[in-house]
Length: 263
Image 1 (cartoon, rainbow, N blue to C red):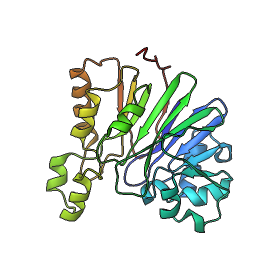
Image 2: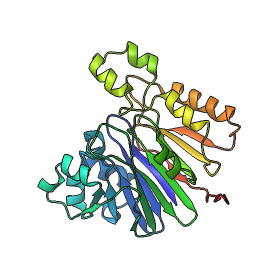
Image 3: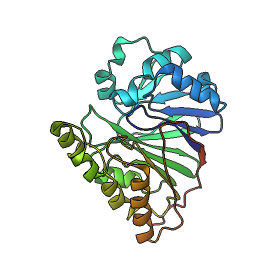
């Protein structure tokens, strides 16, 4: 099992996950042509995808989903809230698979467990994607890490998690105060410090962490990486590989099989 960042950040989010002959896309926040070009550039035929999972309706996660699915012939999947809020019912898509929180659904060789997130959207979801003894946790656009998400990520071997903003840069930045309040709220986004609090207790099974959805105006990759590195070092987790997702196409990241807890 492996995954690859297709795009990350406010300009558009998409992550490709692959196991055997099964490929799924998590989010489609880029235009359909851009998504197809990036997939083809890494040797993946867009028509080979089994499904596109949509975490929520905000445009940087969903804008390319319906036209991409219609062009290449695969269903979308997400919550009922996302279906309604994104207006997918008014589009000509091949199908829509309703994902209910904590109910597992199989797409080929991949098992998907959706997890409800605290974010200002209509029923937004994180995903735990598993194949055999490896699992990827994918959680972006959330105001805080709640108990449900913490429990769901407990046995993941890799984690893609939001590290959206630096509080100082946000407060001193150009956004109107109403938008700053939204980002800072418990239904907004995770700061570098919020992410670090979680990483100090990252599960023992986790061997890879990717920091994602960094704000272009309110963060710098160096700040996010330094803060997360310090948190992992303080937790004695030198075994965890750490990197920052960029706005452009990333490299493949393979998952180390998870070691399940006995208790």
